[in-house]
Length: 145
Ligand SMILES: [Zn+2]
Picture 1 (cartoon, rainbow, N blue to C red):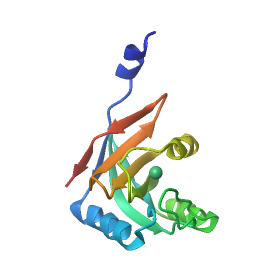
Picture 2 (picture 1 turned 45 degrees about the vertical axis):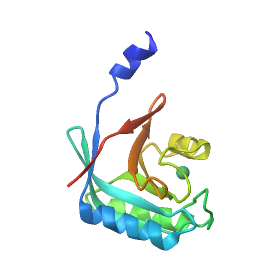
Picture 3 (picture 1 turned 135 degrees about the horizontal axis):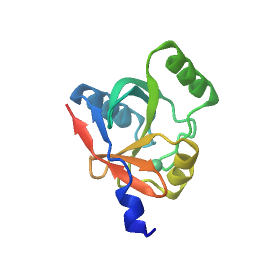
Picture 4 (picture 1 turned 45 degrees about the horizontal axis):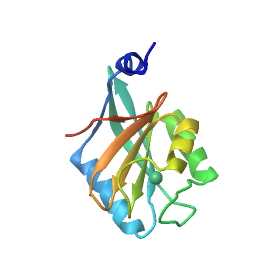
């Protein structure tokens, strides 16, 4: 089986967020500058679309402009939110204040451990992009509603 055949079998998904949710993430990224900001995203999957319903703004424990870590306490809190709501953890958001909206080598390592959609906001291009790690990293279209 060649690579092209493999890729064509990946199910196309779409990540949907409202303009208000986008603004909440933008404000969070702006507030945390010059460091990376991060958040955990909860929602539902409907057919091949992931719909964002709840944003948990988290603290970047590393206070770093090139890396982020969500504390163990906040990850426990996220598990609790998931259990108490009818929502699933569908994504992890973080910002790249000084680079493009593509996963870094470190990001790829953590994408492997956290197999959800990774949304990255670039303070350079002001773009949001969504990625998922399957056999390789692929981009998922984002739709703002
Ligand atoms: Zn990153």
